[in-house]
Amino acid sequence: MKKIISILMIAMLAIALTACGSDDKDKKASDSKDKAKTSQAENQKKQEEQMKEMQKKMDAQKVDDKKVVATVNDEKIIGKDYNMALSSSQMQMQQMGQDPSSKDAAKQIKDQTVESLIGQSLILQDAEKKGYKASDKEVNDQLSQTKKQYKDEKKFAAALKQANLSESDLKGQIADGIASQKYIKKEVPADKVSDKEIQDYYNKYAKQSTGKDQKAPKLEEVKPQIKQQLAQQKQQEKLVKKVQDLKKNAKIDVKI
Image (tube, rainbow, N blue to C red; front, side, top):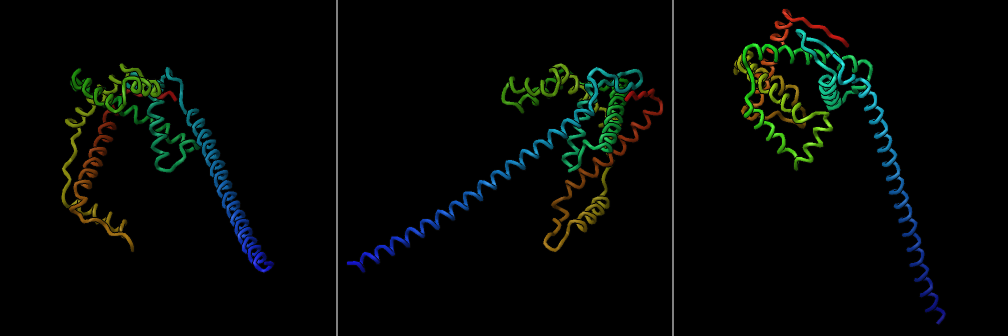
């Protein structure tokens, strides 16, 4: 009987030890998970603090909404327009993995934003002079398309408020955009892209992208994209030249 009891005791002891061992492992695994969660939470909190600090620095780059940033042929560019363009430039820099809050970046962004707004103003002034404008139907159609991106009017109104815009402001921006597009299409048309340019671009792209485990797609697969990109580059270069030409006879005063 004792022998049977001893065997049962040994079995029970083995089960108990296994259970204890399991508890230890579970406890270690649980501790490890808790530490990982804590570490993840700490990292997330740190990242949030860094983002808040960066946002504070980026906000400091803005100017008063009513401040006159520059005048172009006596037309005022105000802080509200500058701040919107500035935020867009900051976002683009972040997407490229760069820090827009650094001192050097702040100056670069400021200069680029001012130059961009001056260029836009010159284009719009020349477009107006030459009779390019948006019809009410074109503006309302595009406004309707914009509204469709939001669930309802309430969401749309909230987005406008966040962007510090009224619906009237937005309609004005849409009208300016349409007029600019018409002007650029007619006055600064994209030059034709040759097959040789496409081939040269593809050869350069293929050489850079091809590696041991990577093979460049066939030219036929990417030709439309290459053609479009080259056409956009050509038009952008012509647009820059157009702005430079307009600047020669313009009265420009930068105030920041």
